Image (cartoon, rainbow, N blue to C red; front, side):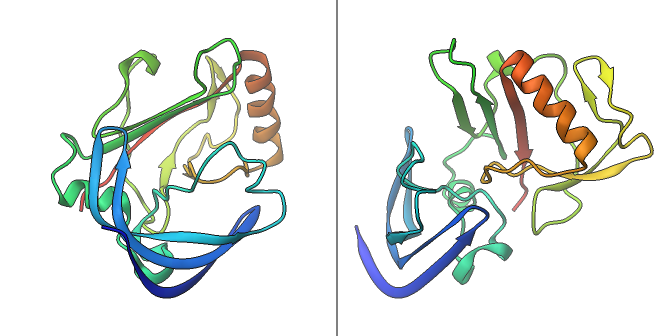
Length: 191
């Protein structure tokens, strides 16, 4: 069903850029097939950022309001086409080489094997990004003493950067190196 519509596009990411044009096609994600999905066919990628990445594309999980060209995101179409059982997507990222795989993305639920303790849902407070209010930031069972009085946080699976206050970032990086575990997160979207 591939159909090029010819609209040119340039996307600047945090660590690189791509340019190309919009097309419409069926998009297969695992067993799910999203029909009539508008996507970008990249014809030019910036320097080594994308060339060194071990991927064959970018799957945006952001809100439609921030997408170039006001394209309907693939997640919205999964929901609108009735392809998912729950209005939840989740991801698990891991760089521990002892595991057979380093990441898992689940549409319509969560992968219980990668959840420790109880799962907590929080409301999105800023719809342009996955921003939410949070309390004290803990790593393992230790308090970091950041956000004791509350602060905002953003979960963004589409960035290679970890940004925040230097003190907390240092503690997170230390924990990552120590344990090999990067993130276990999920987000809920009601459309």
